Length: 164
Image (tube, rainbow, N blue to C red; front, side, top):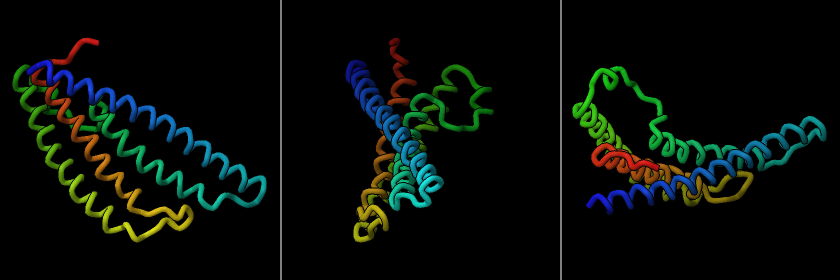
């Protein structure tokens, strides 16, 4: 059973690595696009009509994907006053309960995010002319990534972290 759970963790790590590369590329693209936007507006007096919109959409995806990576590496913002005071098995239990509650919220995010994406399938972005459904799909995508990372955190609390 431990082997199956460790394989799940490895799979999540591979997905996270891929998402990390996506974040790097998205951040670089967003930075270049915004730099060109400012440069062309300042130098040429006009700018690309789609640059701000594309950057905004990239940032939306970066926040949701980055949140899942931050959750996994325990860098997501949290209130730790209580958690710092408990030790041992009680600490493990509290962490598992926190992740379990989070999983419920992530399932809600996936369900209603997908529903919202479907509702916006007929609406299109003004400059890029793409369906807003693709942008709103960032919610269930982020929810799925948060969910699988939260499950991985619970597994690591139960069976212990594997040395790399």
